[in-house]
Length: 200
Length: 334
Image (cartoon, rainbow over all chains, first blue to last red; front, side):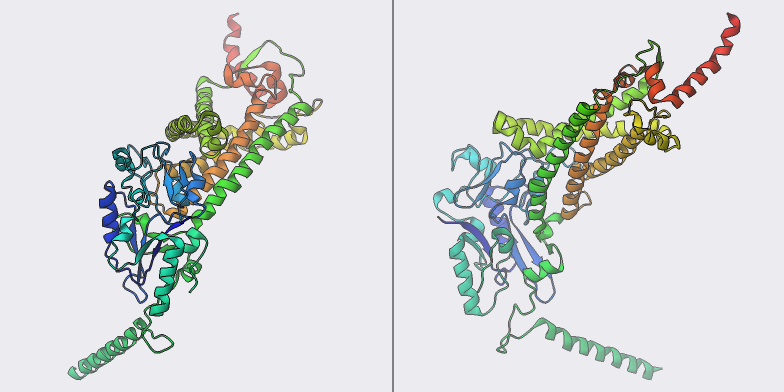
């Protein structure tokens, strides 16, 4: 069984933010919601690296554990989905998420949060809507995964920095790259997300 | 003069040259084989996480909290919430209920030793009772809706199913948010009204020595409030301030706080709230089941004269003296 993961090869990322734009466009994400973002570490200094980050679809996902209404769950492919019909917008998943993935539309007064939105690995929603239906698209965005395609952010990455797919396959691709070019700054977030690192 | 300027310019240009020569040497490091190694100057994530608990950087979107690339503390907070909090809260709350049950079995209901006198005296004015019940009702509502966030999925979810439970939890969230304001209003009123009567006094030591009224043949002297009530007042005030402050941080998420501060606010809110519930359970017990004649003080505001004599003798003496001071004006007219 394939275990879907993301891997950002920071030595290839050029901070072009095309993954961010592709995600917003493909999923028609509302204004103010960013399922994916690019963070630049040591900006303007020696050793500057940019990392594209979204939901990593963690092993033993902490968001799923802390959810008071248990609306977040992993699929058999290891993709972490959630059911917006059940979500109460409490914000706990954001406190638990190591990668700042959950997003909330602002509704009503104070800091009132609407139903949580996050990267679905372009695999539609975790609710009762039929896969690929218009209702599913309106709530969760695209279901490319159901059509046998990978998330668009990784598919259209111009430098092939962002990799998506079976964890073992993308780890192997990264290993080969590091061996061939002689360097690599590591698989960002893997230790925290999957409790394993890629040893080269 | 021009010579000094010339020397000055020379020194500045030399300094600039030295800086220019040093900086690129830092920027481009060479690998062991002499070839340029772009990652030689990169600090890897393991080292970054050893330096600081979070990896932060620059982002292109105006969402400040999104600049945190990685915070493994999220998993620690998950462990706190799902393991430590679940177990400790269960032990504290169930433990308190068991202890109170045990107290009831051993000590039983503390009766008015001399029986009711039939005469009543006003102990709490209407506004004092209103302040108490405003806080009390808010507290119960906040307590139940708050516990639902932590324990609802274990206790209530299997009973009513996910859809109903989600509706209940959604409503509970809004009720919890809005009831916080009436709770704070009640807390402020209580603090102002009962502040001066809750100051520690010498008689509190005697009250403690006499077993706090729980030993049948010993009389524990007290003013308007005894040491036990004073402790409930001060602990409630402290806990109330702590849950309110942390609660408003949670109600206005990321208004001047960052992710570790939000996690800390939630931890403080949860831990203090659990201890607060335990304290108030004891307060409810002694005010209803645990003692005869106590509940009516907050219900009708009037207590039996014999109850007041046994539990608040100094306060009763003072009240009676004040009443007599009013009487002489009426007596000559008889």
